[in-house]
Length: 314
Image 1 (cartoon, one colour):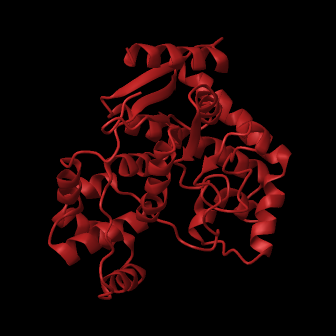
Image 2 (spheres, rainbow, N blue to C red):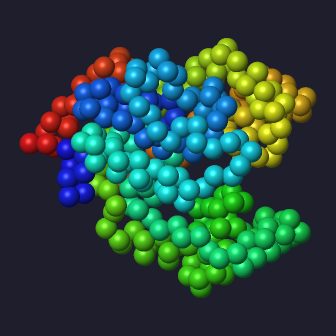
């Protein structure tokens, strides 16, 4: 395996519903490994069905890390993820095992691998003032401000949290988030994994898998899971409840839209998310792609991965 001075790490990525969990487990069995999840929603406790969290049976006895590490009520950040996950990866390697980082949250994965520095700012009140300004003036006004100082970031940032973070970085450091990212990307990475990416020869095959997953989630009790979260006091507006598959059905349970309309919305949102994931991972020039055809099985994908790793390890 490849190493950072010989640290054996595999990074398994791909869009939602592509089979990352199963491949990660099979690789862990073959290479004496443990799985480190890189999924921004599987970190939350009590959110099992809607996040497609692996079951005990699916884990097949393989240790899985960075799952169920936060409460749904609390915000969670990429900086916190890296602070928790990096020592776990190092510990796995120190014990002579293979760390298999598997997930679809590209920002989490890339930040962990690069070793991005997320030193928190001192509490100067800038974030609080930005939050208040966004509430008073609206998000479009904040986006216009970001466009004026960092048009490149404004083009790619869509959500409130990341937009305000970009403005916070600029106000606190005088450096735009784009400049910050370029500078940190020039630093040698913390880890050097072998990258394995899952994709499909026919995009419709992926969409069919997504549609089937949504149906199965409902059959497994997703609505009951969401009711339980709300009844336990998790606010509708909590970050965790904004995840695809939760916010839509929260609206359905509250009577704001029909259940089937919510299910269709989840399917469409999941498809769009899968496209964004693939766009993110395709920028990685070190990626080794494993392509699923119409009749490709999970075992076929694993055997292809194993053959590829043998060739790399020669």
